[in-house]
Length: 260
Image (cartoon, rainbow, N blue to C red):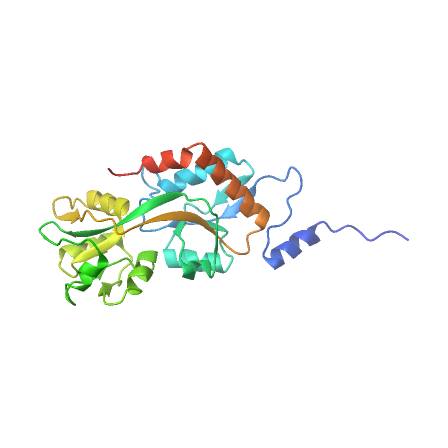
């Protein structure tokens, strides 16, 4: 009696059905990680510019040190809420780079190597005499002192969790929020320092908007991964990021975009 025919595609279909990465036969090529570009964040992704953004440079650096990894989809912009939903549903595998929050950790995994670190600052109109050192200083100013923040960000979640603050998170567009600030639809705009500096320069708002000196918080951003990503794939990504950290490459990439 002849043995039943081999069906090498069965493990592949089973792995796909279970949401994990399929085993890669020898010589089958690199592992493809599905990702996306974040729209409305020119510091991370500015696909039409000479310098494409921190995350694009990091992705290319990973592919250089880890030939077994390749990324797809990083030229496709998506909103941040959509990216997070796609990761949670296993439609994307990884994303560079997110602040870790308890809400995100409930749905996603993170690679424990910082991609870069940001400083939180507040922008005000250039003629504003505010002397703000803490969020409590803003609380004491009263209800007319609205803090603008971009919708769908970790900054929004953090500020909404602070009692006594009056927050406007109606837009996720940084340019729109800067215009709201100028038009006195809020007194403060809370964001990361480098992003604020970049947008103020790009929108030619120097002299109209300034940053307060206080650093309200410093936070690292990490690669987020879908929980369906195979542990072996996550480990390959972790090792590549560790190599880039050890060589100082991640720091160099960030320095190329850092505003002094």
